[in-house]
Length: 172
Image (cartoon, rainbow, N blue to C red; front, side, top):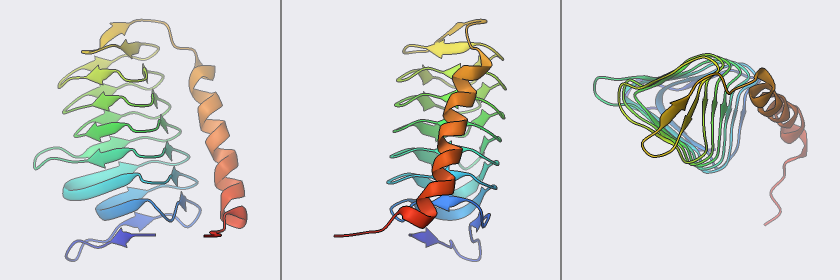
């Protein structure tokens, strides 16, 4: 798997995390316990840092980046869907960002919040607990998210973290 230092800065990956061989991790990136990073995901901590908490999935094709002024933080037990773009934002623990969503500068997704598939959260937006951000630009639908909407995804990927390391093998 392509894991790169940038100068003297090396990624820190917990031994229980699963990083797919086709994911790319660069620079100041920390990935927590039992978290997973899937094929074609890119986490590039060059101008700032990226922190991924415990038991969080970063799914296929997702890009996580920083800016010169803004770091990107994803908490524990989060689901970051396929083809997501996160940059300079904070995703608190136990939140979900749906496939194809874009979450930009200084956005905060609160614990229990959800960004719907293909939504675009523009700079300085806050997605409240139990709130769902929907559309382009995203609008908030308050009190529409239930805990099982997030925990189902967290648990599915935790099962994959346990099964993939011993079963994944390249055949071509």
